Image (cartoon, rainbow, N blue to C red; front, side, top):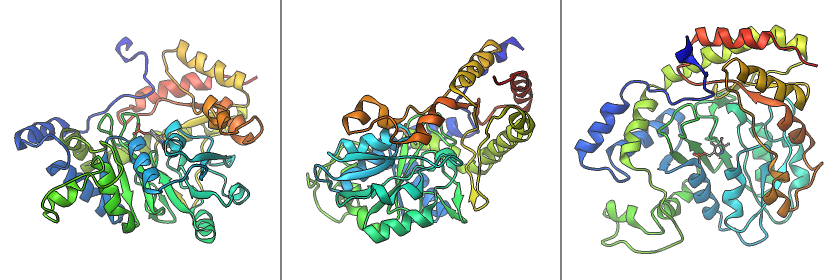
Length: 381
Ligand SMILES: *Cc1c(COP(=O)(O)O)cnc(C)c1O
């Protein structure tokens, strides 16, 4: 039993062919980017998500940076992002001189509140970046209507939501662009990695150039130009084929991975439902028109004090839980862009009360049974 402790919050899980494919990548003699495994991953995602083009990148952060460069932002341009998200969602656009404008979230799904968006749109607004929190779709019908009406570009940060759907359409296929993460903490991983999904092909040619250090190397490799040169802004955003080999093993097995995660999520939900109701704790909410990606399981405790007591309670029984996100509008950078307390009340509330339970592909029912038993011992104040 003691070897199981502490129960980590996350751990990398192998699905089968990772090692064999890495060996094959080495044998292929192509370990830089855009090799055979990169092509396999990209076409796999194109076919399975029903999108037009996918470019593997070194991270989701870098895919967001490519998207931000594609926007050709001018100083003072504004990009609307949720305050309740990972830093990169805002930083990628700030890096290109834009001012992030922070939107609050819905209290039920914790997704960007589409009802709050219109009042945040100004003549300087260029884009909205919805984050499908926990892999549950944002209200894309409303967001797309606003984008069309105000001529804004939608970039989905779909780091949580690979294979999730909104009204039967895959997350990541609504915006002109979308980004994926294959970081160790995500459902499908290669340690560090990401992808840019290109739903609007107008962006493809420049995206390829930006990803290749500002050169037209991709056209050169296709034989469209006879030498390659510096043609635009860019950086080094191409994933090594060794990592793509690892990633392909996981992508090929995505149904198995998703089935495992669905079991884990459902187990937590069923076993904690009554306790949560009795203790005034909120569990995740998934609207009927959304198929979630089973990325995480969280609890919202009645107070910050209860949340911190729960973290300690779990820790004292060898269970590691974590919380996130610190509201971006109240971070030192967020404040420098004008964020102040009270701007996003739901974000400010939820951020202090949310806790994420251990969730990784190999988490066994035996361990979950133990985690649930320890949670059941906890009484809120
Ligand atoms: C993980 C995550 C990112 C960053 O992903 P990396 O691949 O680590 O750069 C961005 N946005 C959200 C919402 C995330 O959860």
